[in-house]
Length: 99
Image (cartoon, rainbow, N blue to C red; front, side):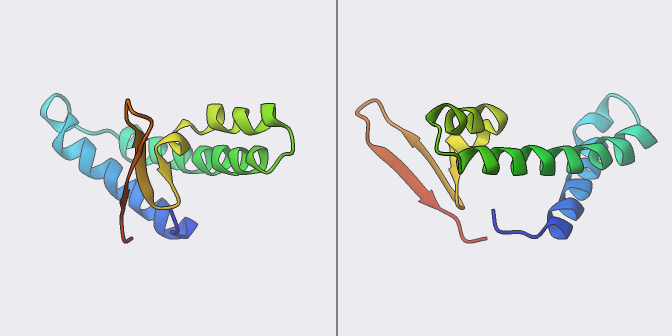
């Protein structure tokens, strides 16, 4: 989405803490695993999956390009800062967000 990895990683940790203390905090107190380990493992895993998806997308093989959507299914609705989906009439509705 245009953010560098440091900003994205920081946002991931911040959103994880926010979720743990607001949404999930109603049921149980956040643990070190919830606050540190989950985003700490999620960030490198997300980077690896995104890089793999981008590599597959650049392939000449249609199968490999299709596989890039299996690795990163969010690409179906979020593309280059745009959120879009197809309607029943096969028209695409697109919203542009300024990040």
